[in-house]
Amino acid sequence: MKILVINGVNMNMLGIREPEKYGSMTLKDLEKELYAYSFELGIDLETFQSNHEGEIVEKIHSAYNNCDGIIINPGAYTHTSVAIRDAIAAVNIPAVEIHITNIHGREDFRHKSLIADVCTGQISGFGTNGYKLGLKGLVDMLLKDVNP
Image (tube, rainbow, N blue to C red; front, top):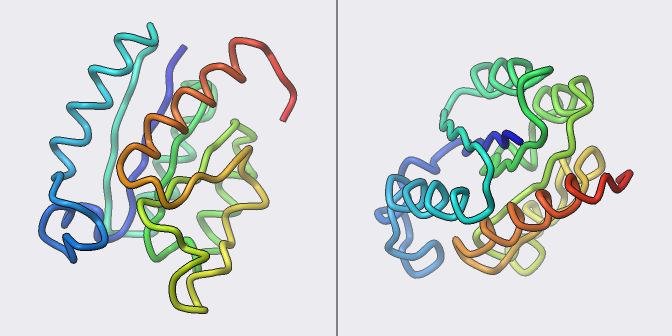
């Protein structure tokens, strides 16, 4: 089983950007932790980060027939990108939307996710642990062959 983890805009600034909200863990540290966790789960993991919407769309497209699931934190594109939403819908691969902060407890403009309705689930507000929660939930769902 192969899972693609996509991090969107500004996620390369983890550990630097607003550490009181996003913590001190860097993206590289997070990826190392996820790779270690993937070994525990017995799955293959690929990580990707881009600040460019089109690159994220192309990466989602590349997952078609290559990945069993997607974990995605689109960053601010969550609230603006019909293109990323449509790419997830197009590949028809189970996806889990992840947010480090609770987007529903922040500014009003962050409450609406354009991605959520094409995802299997959404996890927000658990810090970087949300990635592990999403990964475990997605893997369990895929192993049980549950129809989302």
